[in-house]
Image (cartoon, rainbow, N blue to C red; front, top):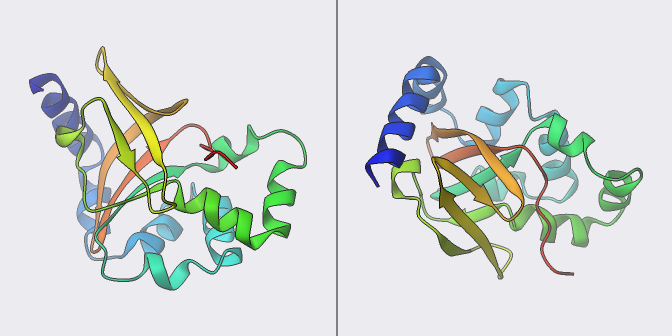
Length: 157
């Protein structure tokens, strides 16, 4: 557990200035301000989830970067954007109700807002959710926390 606390402390030091500014903003506004989540923000808008993620929460969002969305197979993103119900299901799979900080993470099944569970594995100083690696942690927002991941994770459809 101390290893994850240390990793969380390092992440806070590395992203401290951003994290302090983010605390005043909700999850959506923080993602917009970061600049690395334009595809995620576009998808959240298309799925009608802006008001939800600007709500009181708290929420833990495993946020794929634009680079993560670019790894999807050709046409997959367009297909999701054209199907708001399916898109909403995928996006809610990236959200865990409550505020889970990096120091609190251990190997577990995390119940998502989509309704099913994602596999979280903490091993060797690395945290993964399904097949995505958590690359930045503990971006604290007024209504929760964002952990940045390097891939889009998919619920069973």
